[in-house]
Amino acid sequence: MRRPTIADIARDCGVSTASVSFALNGRPGLSEATRERILGRARELGWTPHAAARALSSSKVGAIGLVITAPFATLAQDTFYLRLIAGIEAELDSTPIALVLKMVESLEDELAAIRTWHAENRVDAVALVNPRTDDPRPALVARLGLRAVFFGDTRGYPEASSVFVDDAQVMTNLLADAAQLGYRSLAYLHAASDYRHSQARLDALTAAVPDPAGGSETSGAGGFTAAVALPIIETSDEATRDQVASHIDALVGEGMPDLLLCEDEAITLATLARLDHHGLAIARDVGVISWESTPGLGMRSPTISAIDRDPKILGSAAVQVLRALETSSEPIRRVIDPPRLVPRDSLRSPAAAPGSRR
Image (cartoon, rainbow, N blue to C red; front, side):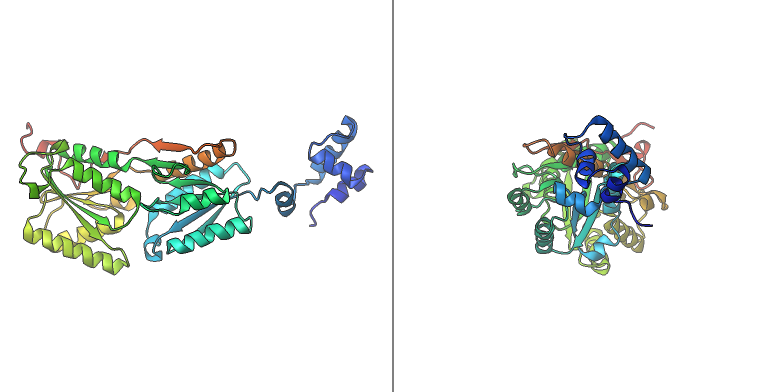
């Protein structure tokens, strides 16, 4: 069925198309009776503005662009981004604004996508993930005059708006919670990257735990006496499994800490498999925590302790920040409350902690 047009409304009401345009756009120059007659007929015909015409007349295209840069093999399994997108879409649900998604494997491709979207007027704003230690994107979107929000801490980039969780505080809280369960030594298996949130976690771990090379025998913040960070280059599923296996094998030979912290689900699952290979029982021989909370980790046996992160909250907050930026000339930074550890079967109970009362 043909969609009704301004010409149809003008013909039915016996007025010019200019008069119809004035009425539909709320412009002066018409009597109230004529305006109401035109608007009433538009409602009867089910008239809605044509998207392309609306874009040409208002420069608004009704879309937010989200660019995610990561290896496609990683994206295929990473539920974080799926839940992040769900949070964005939930916030956009009652609006005509669409989400335009672009996935790329390199920063160069991401920069090219942003420039293309802007040049072709494809989006009104962009949401960008994972601020880097030396990031060209804040300057790029500022130079283009493109509304933008980053998922991650953009301190050091005064022109950038962001929504983020303080990852350093999350690490500090996690160590304190684990120490309450009696844990004192930790190995942190994490993806090697130049993301700011990754460095914030490592810095907090280093600050909280004494350097064993310094000969210190005292406990750091939260009671931990030793910690080691073990980087993993995630080029493929097989590479992740091999590198995790190598790290676990080395820990078995050198002395297994009493707690393993795994940055994401893939690293966690590879860790569990290698511990089983060595006959090590989860919780009894070594505790396991995943930084990423996924439904699968909570349903397996034993259930895996995790930080209670909800990426949907970040997605929703990002849309709210982009709305606020429509009328704000200053960058907006919204800090989300840090999530806490959810202890499950993979950690010993407080009653089993050394020195605890029975």
